[in-house]
Image 1 (tube, one colour):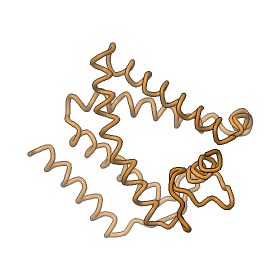
Image 2 (cartoon, one colour):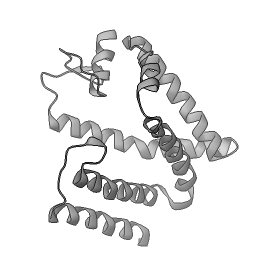
Image 3 (cartoon, one colour):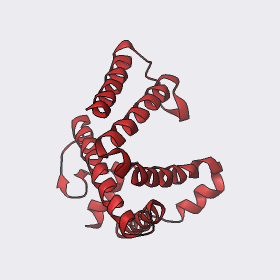
Length: 179
């Protein structure tokens, strides 16, 4: 179990030699691009489920901020249990706090704003329009990050095909909104 969790964490960015597990459950000889893409689609498919559950929680509590707080609390406990079971050194967070710019911690702020916003928007716009707009925003900024190599990411130049992909997604959002 501990080895499977350590291998799962390897998927999340830690380099652990000899790990051949997907989600700590199934052994695979190679973690190829197709499996990673399927994992991305699967995790993306869970986001509307999270939005629906957080919307229900918001109705049962004092609103989207409390629901987002509860969601992050449960998520933090879950990650803590996974980290402890996998034998992750939690002291590395202290090391990162000393060595990294304070801006690296803004990911947590962005995550909180994201979950709170989705919890607020879903009952007002609907799941499909909310996520269509979220994905449009993600894709637009993603192609810019790729094109300019922002945050030290590898450069992948903007191409007519990429522009067409973004435009098609925007057309999809308009169609979702209209119908």
